[in-house]
Image (tube, rainbow, N blue to C red; front, side):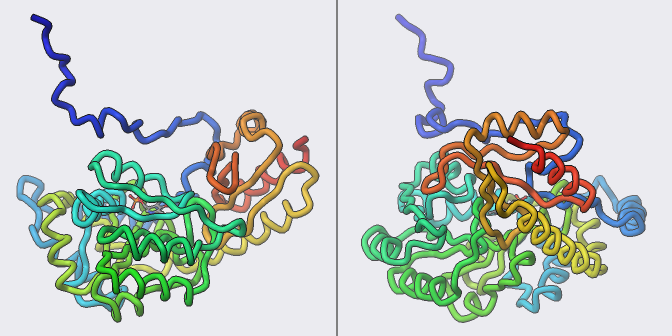
Amino acid sequence: MTKPSPLASVRQSVQNVAAYPYTPSQARIKLDQNESPYDFPADLKRLALERMAEQPWQRYTDLNTSSLRQGIARLEDWDTDGVVVSSGSNVMIKVLTELAGIGQTVLTTDPTFSVYPLESGLLGANLVKVPVNADLSLPLKALKAELQTRGPGLFVLIQPQAPTGHLDDPATVRELVEVAAGEGWLTVIDEAYHQFAGSDYRELVRECPGVLSLRTFSKAWGLAGLRLGYALAQPELAAQIRKLVPAFSINVLTQTALEVALEHPDYVIQRTQEAISERARMLAALTGHPHWKVWPSRTNFFLLQSGDVASTFRYLEERDVVVRLQKGLPVLGDCLRVSVGTPEENDAFLAAAAEAR
Ligand SMILES: *Cc1c(COP(=O)(O)O)cnc(C)c1O
């Protein structure tokens, strides 16, 4: 008798999916993960550490994460009952796929943020991807056609888009959201980068019960290491989402640090302004580059194309700059994704660019 493989009970859909791809680099200038180049302000970090020390670590945290959700509700002018928190918005993407994707469809664009196809694959949802237009805008007609035939399920809009940095016309987004609502879809508007675009879909979420905005502390807030994401939805939908978030999954240290950040949100404004002006400076300096093409962006990163992205990647790494390889993107082909860093880091990147062949 042959023994069954030790992996025999691992679902085929899990075995079929490649693990989240990321290769760390030793390069000093880190422009590969769209993080903030700046740590949490030192005085706030000290305050957070003091408060952490006062917490009872042997106790479970507040099941309802009330004070954290209240802080977010105040910041966003939102009903506390409509706020759902998770340990990073990546976790919320899993939860939303469980909520509306399993046994149904996840509809998104191509390219899209990699975690949506990843979770669809792992959880066995039917994934439908529609290529973006040549100018990277949303393919309105094609998405409408899919919304009208493939529902119900989870409809994913990312504004501004990732990994392209493109911000769409709000009228297009509204039209799609309304079609989706009419067909019974749950729509997530992933606003991970909205601060860098000046865009904000809270109003649409207030109007439409089947729509939510997904937000994170990982980008503009510069707190990727703390792991906190949240959804803004109407309370009835939020209550359903909350059932799927594992109990006690936001640890007391994260909750404490986030409460300090929410009491002192002003540092985010100046940093966001700097990222926006640095983005403009980088894109202007790279326009007309003899060998590279850059795409306009409304986020804290931009896409760059060169004749051979793998060799450009290595060239930059030799200059101590690491960016993200994005091979074979639909519509675009091979690209490099470059995060906006500090002015000094961006200078180093631009100096390398000026000598690139
Ligand atoms: C970075 C990013 C997130 C945030 O992920 P976290 O898990 O909150 O760090 C979500 N969506 C998109 C499109 C992103 O680029």
